[in-house]
Length: 154
Image 1 (cartoon, rainbow, N blue to C red):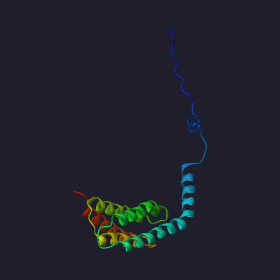
Image 2: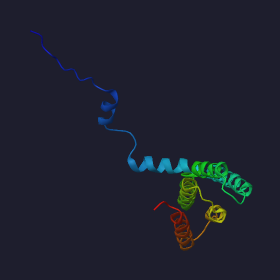
Image 3: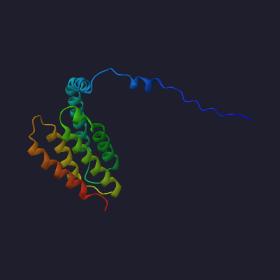
Image 4: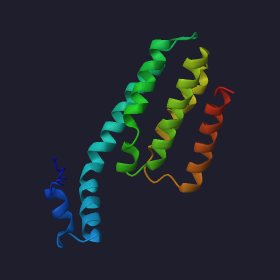
């Protein structure tokens, strides 16, 4: 007769997590915030560079449906999502998400609205403005959501 024996290995990570010590949560958050502060200027510069590339790509769009051009805009906007929160302009992330949604809806339906895309890109530049008051941000984002929903599949 054979016997079955179950062996549960001890994981080093689990042991370390149970041991007291390390940074307090508040201190860890303070350090993380300090690290993010050092990244702000670089992050902002990267986001502005993406915006400038998007403006150039938008300028190349013609008056008819251009799937490749819209795919380029989608890629540029998608790469910027998340950077707004790091560089102190979290509304930019929402604006970029709206631009991605709009371009996705347009490409899916194979329709074209150059002006709607332009509104989103101009809003991106506006939302990058340092010190933009909160009461000015909400209407911009609401307008971008309306533009995107206009082309959402029903």
